[in-house]
Image (cartoon, chains in turn orange, cyan):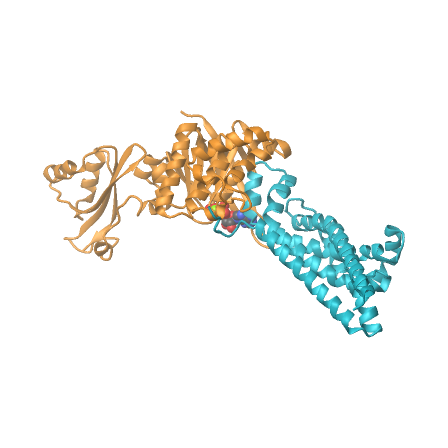
Length: 348
Length: 224
Ligand SMILES: Nc1ncnc2c1ncn2[C@@H]1O[C@H](COP(=O)(O)OP(=O)(O)O)[C@@H](O)[C@H]1O
Ligand SMILES: [Mg+2]
């Protein structure tokens, strides 16, 4: 078991409201963020993601509970002590938050100046960081002259300047187009591998989690409703919120013509059940479906299907229909062979 | 126009420049930090001091709502205490500074409040002290706006400096009143007005040029 880089221990954060009930932004959060991993926290707008992330570098204080980073409780740190701890945690932002008045090199130098690094050491360190994020030709440009992706690279270089142990990312790709998003995510992944940096990112897009996160926690209304290794959560989503985030991202959705006719219960003897089958690893489904036909006499129609990669694990998802009288039997058979099934509804 | 008059115009121009330059300088030295403080000391801000913020804001408003000519007369004892005399060009710098400082403070405050809060957040995340945030983030980022504000203040001071004849401040405005109006020499009045227009124009253009140099926000064609 890997050691936790960040540990949220019973963290609650209330925002008192004038003349009303407090807003419970975070409600008794217990979560360990593993060392050297990329952990994603996914949730809808207002779920409490930013509040949770900002606890890690003390930009936000909990109402109760502890946040342990590198064996120290951030919530107790103050003044110079807190500022020293903040230098060990880098942060990147949705809107980049670069200084318009400084060049790329100047922006990356800022945290070093703040940390009191001697001028003679700043220049070589900045040059190294600019190289690391692939902005060699842009050193003397101003943020206004850069594309969104380039700005976020500057943000990443700046966040890494003081050699932090942890990188926090608050929706860092939400303002970027899909291509640029992929490039920035790849850069984060490279940095995670090469520097062994722990990354904690928050997002509202499951695609970001699928693409780079080894671990995921789903947050809803200030509570963690599900957490674990990404492929495990993807293959056995338990909470409805997780499931709704997964639709679309796993590439399968019930085709429109079927969705339109779907009911919660079979309406006739000839009705068909619509079943979602998910599986992790290299299970071959085709033989499984033919064995289902041969061994149980259950014929299936494939309505939709896709295979994705989650880290090193292929992750497949199929939507099939089969006679409504037999889903229990089919599910038992598939379950024995390591597949997850869920009845989505009935047609006819 | 006689050589005598031309010499008088020249001297008056220098007196105006002297009063405006000195009061701009002192006004900025007082108003700049005051503006930074006003912009960062409300409840929950960097230097959270709500009571002091409110008190200073009140003083700034009071100074700004007093008509300048009344201010000049009202603070004569204070002027005498600071400048040793209450009459003359140097003495006039005191009321001009008192008028300029709160004006500059409010302009600086407005420019600093324009700076995106995300930058403060980023700097705090880097472990910056409040002082570092002011010096390395807020002031540099607000610089284009601050320079334009100072330009506005200098232009206003050129106008105010025309009123200090009342306390023997001399300068162009005083010359215009004494010769152009009281002795009815319209050519002096015209010359004074033209010089003032040229001064204001130069200050305005210079201010805009400097502000543009500081402003890296808009993409521009950088040659090369
Ligand atoms: N400074 C604040 N004052 C009052 N309420 C806040 C504050 N910050 C966040 N909240 C509330 O806490 C909840 C969680 O906010 P946030 O962490 O920003 O969510 P997310 O990042 O997931 O969109 C929201 O209901 C939000 O309105
Ligand atoms: Mg947020």
